[in-house]
Image (cartoon, rainbow, N blue to C red; front, side, top):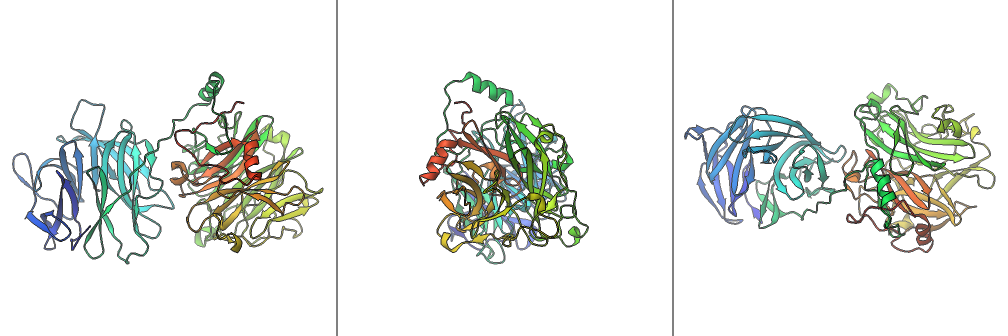
Length: 638
């Protein structure tokens, strides 16, 4: 359905299953006309809507108001905001008769509201509104009294995928909480509509966000982008009204919203007690790569400036029954350092240090003064310099650290450092001076070191596309000295390698290796990152087995991704649709895969290692199923 020739600043609302429009009259923003819409070709002008106080005093709409509709049971309310007077709330007595209840100068952006529970004051509501170009906030106010209490920010737009200005379209109470619809624009400047769910009693607590936009303007639209003007529920269906460049309004049916809430996090003590008390656990099977119910494992810490923005992309080591993580930490200044956390069971992070354990110290990883004037165009994770995307490898009594070194101005490269196993476990962070082992001035990422020597030499996996590339050296100490670097193909530079022979497969755009290879009797297990041009913008994880003695040879490759972005925390961080594996360990026959989720947090997924390998070797498809939300716990016991 399309409603034709509708002027700017139009509001659509349903009232007792009838559709109405409010629109400016004759170019005068102070004069508005109310029409009932019969169908795409017919409309009936009722009158100029009028707002009045309880004492029948006429109330002006002000200059260029933004109208919104809110509902409470059988009652409907009109809200409008202006820069001069803020928010006005009026009860709709009939389509063109609005009784003004109260005004709030504190709110100057479009606002919608729902009932606020937990109080005997029946006129208290939660009002949701944009308190800035990118922040949604909530306040508690009284409908018929001038009482305003700001509660705080609800959510910010997802950096990298959503941009301002943000506007609230609709709010309603559902069984799971309060559902809020809002608009923003994507990276192309085209509007989109998303939804989020907040707790009824704690409206600043976000329980869920739509993993993908409910609606996004097609890139084929004219230069004058369409504007979402309203969302309404009618006959249990959700409709979006979009104003087009020609002044018409399209009525679009939105997909049904499936709210999938995640289990509440448990403390480490609760998890351990539960594992020891409950004997009948569901064991892992090879057809499940199961996300831990307590994800994310690690999140940014606002009180620590060095990790206030992000904590993601963790390296992992399993030593003496304990899992050690070195994760990429980022402050609001965009500088990346490495933080430390550890776990006894692989999921409960009982220990996390409050200071970074590895920081930029060389000209190739310390941010330059020129980075502000002429920053390098291809950045990862929103970073502007530092130590990025670590990988840890234990060989005999030495732990080697490979990381992406970036100064913010020149192409990032690959650096190497090391520390003794004893110092690492004692948390004596005596790292050797890092050295750049890739050619300076040539972008390189995603290099990993094999955990054992191959044919008596150290082996570095520095490329998997268009072919597997391994460099063998007698000693790692010789790299980065006297002009000796690993010679590798130029990295993708933000685009990815495209292999002709894999265009029909899901991994037709390859990004690079993930965690360091894991030894198995059947071959080296390697995870890697790839994309599908038919499903753009998503980092997915694949798996393959390389020959033990000739790792350039691929023995088996998973026919589908073993992990792809599907959950809230994988799609609503700093970069939508990213799962990025830097570490994986085997503990008690369970494979733990640690990854960065949407460039913001650390998460983990797990699977039975023997059965996973059996499926990979047998070339079964699919090797792994994705997460099912009603069956998302795994056992750490045998």
